[in-house]
Image (cartoon, rainbow, N blue to C red):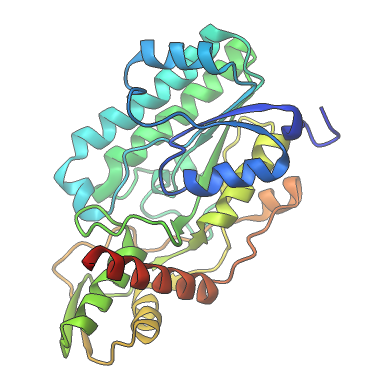
Length: 320
């Protein structure tokens, strides 16, 4: 233990979803703290099976578990498979929590939730206590409700079993290594791919979903990993914890920034008949700052430049 809570440098930390987008930032961040990081391969460890989770705990003997594993995607993916998003996310999280209780030797369990759990019309900036003020935005409600249920489960297990379970709520994540599959990607990689494809195809006009008036808050995955590590070491409360920048960006402005960085000079049209998701999204980040001393460091402009360049090189490699 340290004055801030758990000493990561002497801890065995199991990261579920360690091979995913955020996991690829989380593992090296934990390594920088001196932690012994357990990074199970995706194959062979289906977290929807409680036996697999029980065996994983017994074999890896973790002190701390950071649960990143999730089925996630953009608006289209959520509309195509709402049942899967609800079922898989709820089941994985339930198994991770319940088997941690059964194992009995885990000092801290960090559940990484989602900003999608907040109600559709939450007053901005979103405060943690507002998470129960209404129903999530319809296009991703099954995903958001599943993640919100894991918050309740963690609070209930904290109350009944005395488990140190905490729940963090990151803003929209982005950065190099993100998922650029147009069927499942979130807004930043989706826009980068569409605009760079337009440049390669010499298109003079593209159409994007929605009106462009919706807002989002974007958190670089590197900053998110640092915030989660800080929460693993020093956060101990049943209240969820926002992780973000506190900066709100209109999707129209985001598209303009990415177009400029991608070299796209054509016209951008907006299809208002397509869904836009939650109207506004920006977090109150004061509790993470005050309780953990954590703030995001990477400006959106810098992070977008990194991500655009990364995908530009990655897409060229895929073509060769």
